[in-house]
Image (cartoon, rainbow, N blue to C red; front, side, top):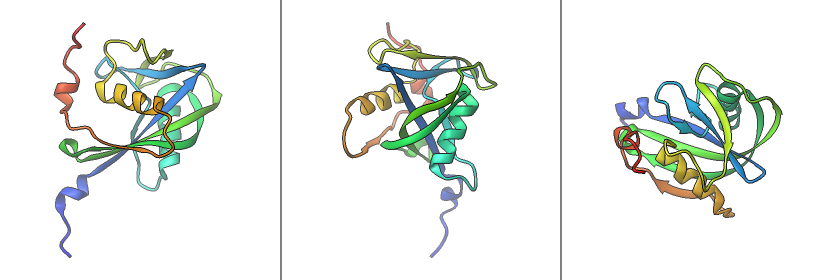
Amino acid sequence: MTENPLLRNFRIAVYALIFEQGQILLARRRDIDWWNLPGGGMEIGETVEEAACREVREETGLEVVVERLVGVYSKPQKQELVLSFLCRKIGGMLTETEESSECRYFSPRALPLNTLPKHRQRIEDALLDQERAVLRNQLTSQEEDQRPPIA
């Protein structure tokens, strides 16, 4: 079988959905000034759980455990597969980090206007509270996602 050179650059990303008293934790990214769920790309040698915990720690200062898979998102335009996990805080303190200028909890019905649209969808999927993970295609481009929101 011939190796597909595009798959060498395929990325797997993990994102954490951390709820506390009905509110969802978001981090404000320094690089694009948008709010998003804590998460990012897996590193070589990591499990998905290790990657999710590391990303949360790096972006928020919190320690978490992964409780369950919420969604699997195909992003073919970026050659990316995204896994979102419901996580539970077990320690640490919210802090400003190299990647995030601020971390805060928001009501899912009152997210900041500059919350990344794909992340809004992942939060909505978590609120469905389904037994099985959601399978979804997220086909918009990064440029489309980062257009100013319509108020």
